[in-house]
Image 1 (cartoon, one colour):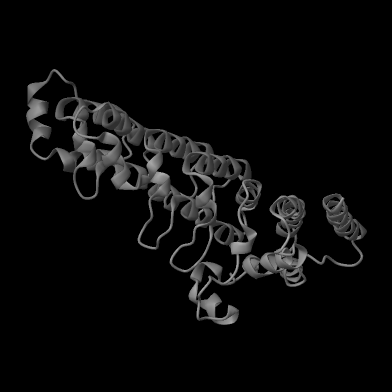
Image 2: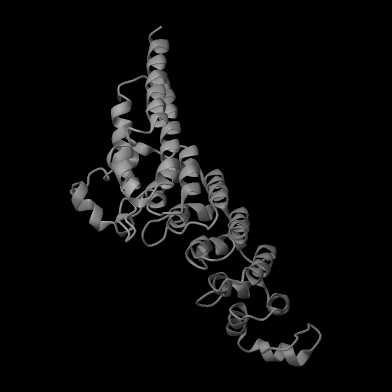
Length: 319
């Protein structure tokens, strides 16, 4: 398509000097094996700012088209640029959202490496919102990586560099990252990561101040409606109800925190068992607030152990 470009050939420089942005975008979305080398030649001659120009931006085109090898070349030039504030220009592109939304079948380790690179270059991207007031953590919970291990590593990265407050933020529909992750059938790693980092289960209910009741609010949030396989997406109300019943709100903060940790461990285990169950069993579990079938002795023992731990905590606090 473009042949082999070299820095020494003046005719080639004249060729791509006319419409550089269009040519860079064409290469970025091509299947050429030597696309990274071509992009390297373009940017070396034209300047790194070309990767941040145009509509759409060439760097965004590369990520959307799955040419992460090309995108990494562009990122190298962007961050080595002496013109303006390259990290600010990078932040404006909101590339993390594109990584989350596109190329769902890409290898998780490749996506995770791109997220790590983008966050390293500009951590402020983790606090940027899209038109639906979603943060990148929301978007990655809507589009889980294909590996549970990669999902957990992703949450570690997003929380460590984006601050823990992002765990409990809501989008325009009132959904938290925990709710969005629970609405996906293959997001066990996300659930474990969110709970391990302290996602607030109290916030997993109908948004405060909402004029809608529970049944009226659910249909307005498309991400929380049931899928055709019947997987329950109501984690918000059932878990919040369990938490409210288990921990009296008037307790002293240290005791409340200790009991909250105990219950969070219980819920994490319950989630793992639930997400491994059949769709119908999953629905029953949530409706019963994790009241598993009576024949499952181990589950009854787990609940009794939880009760004993709570009682011990009360006694220790009273003493």
